Image (tube, rainbow, N blue to C red):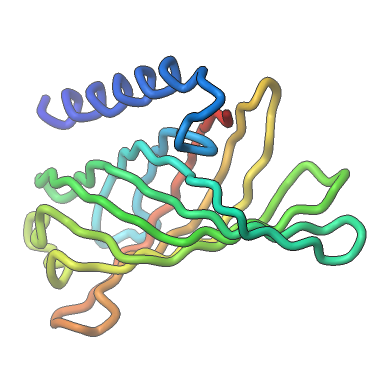
Length: 177
């Protein structure tokens, strides 16, 4: 029941943010919600997240049709696994490579994550400070909406023990402004 309350709260925040984002001076490039699940068989995890992309001035044209952008991704979410629910926050640079006329872009991101729990049942993630690295595909839809898929690895990068790592499949729906 607690997990569902947290999910509903995150979805409400997403809705409120998108309604208030009708101004031309909104801080985020896009705001979205993600749903994820573990890519492994030995543990069972779910992830729910509200995230936004902050546009930066850094963009490059690579040839006539390719574009590379460097933006900043921030997010708050809930990680539920092995009977335990905890929160997380992350911030990371996000590089997006797109090609004019091709509907899918490739992105990569890596950065720090703070967890509110370091044990999920018997699964010890190896500390409250982690790093998340991901690679994914993003596809724009109509009216500023987009969908994305990413495979994400969560790990403490060996700064503490244990360091089991956690791989997640994440699906995101977002609205650009």
